[in-house]
Length: 366
Image (cartoon, rainbow, N blue to C red):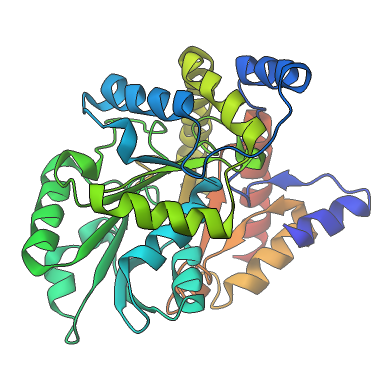
C-alpha cells in the first residue's frame, strides 16, 4: 500500500489489487443515519459490550442469514474484528499456549498471538485440503494444541469450509479440548454456496465478524463476537480496560446496515463479475495455478515458475505497469516467496486493465 501511494504521489495511475478494502462507501442508509446522529447525539461513551439496538439487530441477522438463534447477551460489539481477536485470545489462552491455524493465512493471527505471548503454530495447507486445516493435519502436531483458528471464506485463498467439514472440525475440537475460534468476516461474500457459521455446531466456539467487508465499512472500525455465557463478564472487563467502548457513531449508524442487504448484495454481484474476469484472464497471462476463490474477494496465485522472490516481483510489477498486488510472504512465511494475492473488490475497469497489463508484462518476461 505504501509503495502504491508513493507511485500515486508521483502522478502515476495505480490499479489497486493489493488491499482488501471495498472501493464502495458504506451503505447509503448508514451514511444518512450518521449525519443525523451528529445533530441528535452527544456521542459519549456507550457500555463496553455495545449498544442494545445493535446487539439485537446482529442477533436478528443470524436468524435471517443462517436460521440460527443467538441470544443478544452472547453478542459483543468490538472495535473492528481486530479488537475482537485481542479480546478472544486474552480470554481463551494463557501465555505459552499453542494455537494453530492454516498457512497461508491472515498474518494478524500470528502477529497478535506473538505479541500476547501465545505461540502461533502454522499448519502448512495446500490444494489437497483446499488450503484449510483438517483434524488429520492437526494430529501431525506432536506438542499440545490449545486453540484452532479457522477462516471461511479465507484470506488470502478465498476457500471455504462446508457444513460437513465444519461439523467435523467442531466435534474434533470439543473432543480434544481445543478452543475453536472462527473468523467469519467474509460471510456474505460467496459465489456458489453460502458460508456456514461454526456457531451452528458449537456453542463453545468463538465467532468473530466485522462490518468492514460485506457491509463495506472498513474505516468505521466496527465488529462483533459471539461468546459463551461464562465469557461475558471477563470480556466486559477486558473491553472496558482496553477500549472503554466501541465507537459510538459507528454503532448507531451500523445498526442501519442491516436494512441495506439489497444495496450490499449489489456490491457482491460486482465482486463476482471481477472474480470471473480475473479467473478467465489470469491463466492466459501465465498464472494458472490458482486457489479456488469460493468467497471473499481474493485470488491467490502460485508464481513459482516466474520468481522465487514475490516481494521483488510485486514491486517491479507496480513500477513497470502500475498494477499493485500483494506478495504472499506475509500470508505464508515458509512458501510465500513463490505466491501472490490479487484483491478484486475494486472497480471492474481496473480488473480488466490489470489483466491486460499482466499479460503484456509477464509475456515479456517469459
